[in-house]
Amino acid sequence: MMPADSGETLGQRLERYLSALWSDDVGVTNLSRIPGGASRETYRFDAQTRAGVRSLILRRDPTGSLIDTNRRVEFLAYQSFHGVVPVPEPVVLDEEGGALQRPFFIMARIDGGAPASPFAPSPYGEHADEIGEQLFAILGRIARTETGALPLAQCFGRPDPSTCWRGALDEWEAVILRDERHPQPIVRAAMRRLRRNPPPPAARISVVHGDYRSGNFLHDGHGKILGVLDWEMVHFGDPLEDLAWCCDPLWNHFDSTRVAGTISEAAAIAIWERESGLKVDTEALKWWKLFSAVKGQAIWTTAAKEFAVDNTNLSLAISGLYPPRRHDRIMADALQCLVEEGWT
Amino acid sequence: MTPTAPELLIGCAAALVAVPNAEDAGVFTATRLRTVATLNVLVAQECANGSAARVWENAALRLLLVEAAERYGARFAEAASIDDGDLSLTALDGANARLRRLLICLHEAAEDAADHKLDRTILSLYCEMARRRELRLPGEKPAT
Image 1 (cartoon, chains in turn blue, purple):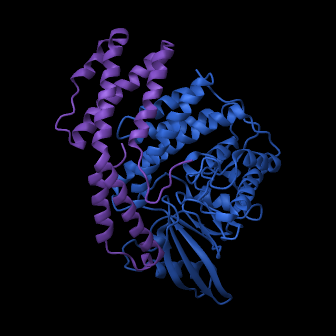
Image 2: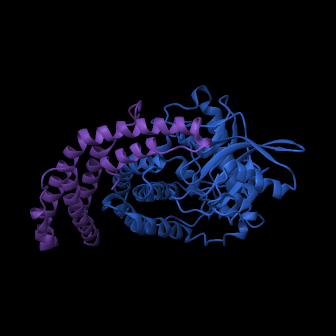
Image 3: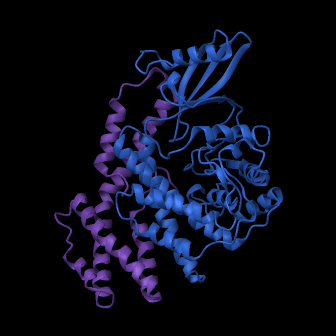
């Protein structure tokens, strides 16, 4: 293990680590940090080996984070779905972190694509329909995948279908209560309402990506999804959680007629049902939609708190400022509608 | 509460003066500069409209809470004495925090009492509170 203050650059540390890992004389070139989400530092680089050049991505734990996640879980998610849906090939996980100062993992790089900015108007242009078809088909395939044999099963027990909603709500409510810097009456009201009006049992316990949305996949600009990214919040639960999150108005690119800036919600649900083999319970989906706004508000609440600690992390600043205002609006509007529909 | 305007601007300044690592050059630095620009636009909106939104919200909460005191208890009448101080954002936020805590209690009490009229009044108020606090990103088109 290298001491933290050895004075080596990140590239030199990577060379030392990969040379030992692969019993090779590895050279690291083109090392460059990229904006890869607020929860981990992300770098692209090329590793020169005797066998040739490997195009790679490094995901390293940050000093402060939007969400407190386990890099092992994210790595196992890539292992679980590589070859099933488009995801990068996982290469190595180092949970000790001494070699690069903090825990990290490395995966193969998918070139030729980019993620959309989640708040850009019309990011998929004329290819919105094709992207939407793939986006919800992939999500359906994730929901269809049997959990028991996956590497991810090392990390998670199988939640009870009838109460998994409560576990999810408990988790995010605790985050809000822990990190809140200012009273938030709207999200408090939403949490109470969710508890009083629980959803029906999950039709199936599936892998839940946890942050499946526009902006978290690579697309080639010509209508093809190349890779689903950012699995750090993956868990087992009701697959409607992902469907609702992906359909959250925050990610609709300011077009309420299209979910995730792609296709209509009805079309998205039809594709998802076809691929998952499940039927969407509309009442359950309403519950998970309101839950999505609560979960979002918890994430943004933590971002605001973390920004107060590390005020140079501008991803935390944006996350703590803009989305919570929109999620308050989304939640308030949803609460009014749900009460009109008979929610107690 | 979302980060304050001073916290955000200090953060932008700190990010700009920080000595970058060699591997930060390129896309990451370009994105950081865009983020600084975006934050400045959002902070400008907050400085222009934030006081008005808070003064309105505090007044609305005061009125609601004081009116509810007769049925739900004298503690809600305390809202009348929570003033906005010197009208700085800090003072307004301090008053707002106290009023919002009372609002949370009042809404819980209304729900427990099955007071649908007050419940709906509060839900409508939430919509207006959220609407007045919304920010617009640069180039954001109005929602359809």
